[in-house]
Length: 147
Image (cartoon, rainbow, N blue to C red; front, side):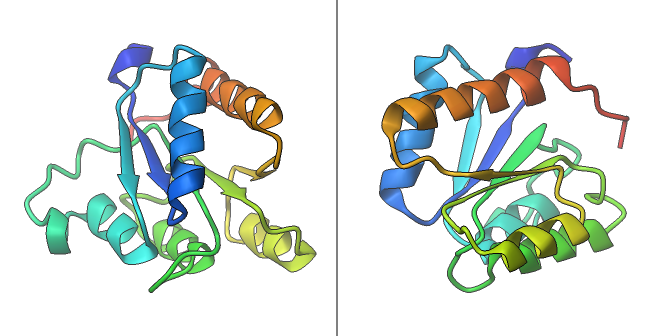
């Protein structure tokens, strides 16, 4: 699978952070499809082909999920828990991308099997660099098993 066929699922409820992430990816020439969902329910619906995404071909999985923790309806920790409990999604790479500096959030995320935990830098230049590195690693370098 080439880098351009790899989809990024961005789970972000803050419109400013969503715009920053998309801008940072595009600025770093990461032209992959970016699917954006705005809360935990929508994320699970997308991944499992339910709700507003009923009928979506769930064999088409994102290459990486950028998951915020502080989400409405179902928070990021619960989304991660449900992904790891399901055979279809338990191996999907999940990067927690959050403003949370709470140690417990980090411990919970790693305990539930996140692949990486990244605090969102406040500075746009730092944020752009963090997103560039995430994109380069997860889309170009990392190899995934067939799920």
